[in-house]
Image (cartoon, rainbow, N blue to C red; front, side, top):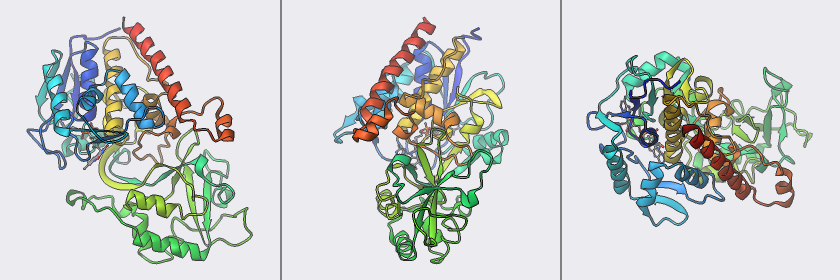
Length: 457
Ligand SMILES: Cc1cc2nc3c(=O)[nH]c(=O)nc-3n(C[C@H](O)[C@H](O)[C@H](O)COP(=O)(O)OP(=O)(O)OC[C@H]3O[C@@H](n4cnc5c(N)ncnc54)[C@H](O)[C@@H]3O)c2cc1C
């Protein structure tokens, strides 16, 4: 049954996700109060008091809905009536195949549309602790720079290990791009572990000379710098970048994350000098995480240097590594499929704080949170879209598809989608499967949208 139809849903944070969530709620006929602290209190990165301010680049990345997963996500969001995409399209700038926007015009349009909406009330205030108990439905969309008072309250609720203030991202590789003439599956000492079979890791082995050349390349590679306000981030020592470990001496890596012990290379009878291990990163088994390879190397350098690893010469990366100030939940452990906190279901989360990465992905999760909250408010429960869609693949990943042990922020990518029924045909013929994945996604999204429309009628 619908409850308390005239009570607003409270959205905390008027960034990319919160603005989109508020819009979706209001468009569904549900009153919203949007609480945004800027104007009263700034973050370290925002410069204005506009809603949906872009803190850094002005790009929403590729707009190719046929061959690129983020382009597909754009298209799905347009079909869901996204305010962020409408404002982006209205203020787009020439940028080849990418959707780049005039940041001032974009944020001004989002602010104006929300301010003018009769069902939206905007309050400029910091929510400095858990929302009051009489707010029966709340969307927390406070982003990577959630204010410390609210972050502390969430930390007390979820436990210390479930909220990170720093991401330590190791690159993720598409399994299909790994050369198994050189790499092999094996767990160290063939240990099966609780969910394994003794062959859970992909191993890539070095001989001495190429290993030393690899260490040299790590040291010489161009790095990104921490921003001034990131420098004293507390978790830095616990997750050292691979190049910092390499700088401690040529043997540090081969006695650390690249130790060769307990592994036998079936392709060679030689004793191997160092081994890179990759661990399964999603339930589908399509993505593998380079264990211990969090890094501040520039993205181009990562591709160049990590392709020196035997077996990864043609590696395609679903995500490259990085270390940044961030605030994100261990969503696979904490959130249900409706993006609600299992421990306090009146709190729903959206945006970067759920462990997605990027403007578009954050807005996409805001879109879903808004729609799911509106359906709940109207007493017409709605399931998240199927994982064959970009929206569904993303929400499926953060609420269960990803491993909770290694969870780190993720961009949308085709590795998150379930395989096509005729996947083997694409492999055999070397045809790109991306257009087929996109066509299936848009078809399945249309079915989901129809179902949602009928339920709301
Ligand atoms: C320095 C930096 C650079 C980045 N560069 C890029 C980039 O170039 N491209 C890209 O795709 N992504 C980038 N990101 C990631 C980017 O932040 C997210 O992609 C996106 O902005 C996240 O959207 P969001 O809505 O979750 O958070 P935000 O857009 O940050 O919105 C959160 C909002 O919540 C408000 N808020 C926080 N705490 C409270 C509180 N307690 N009460 C009320 N309001 C509160 C904030 O003021 C903010 O307006 C960057 C992130 C950072 C930190």
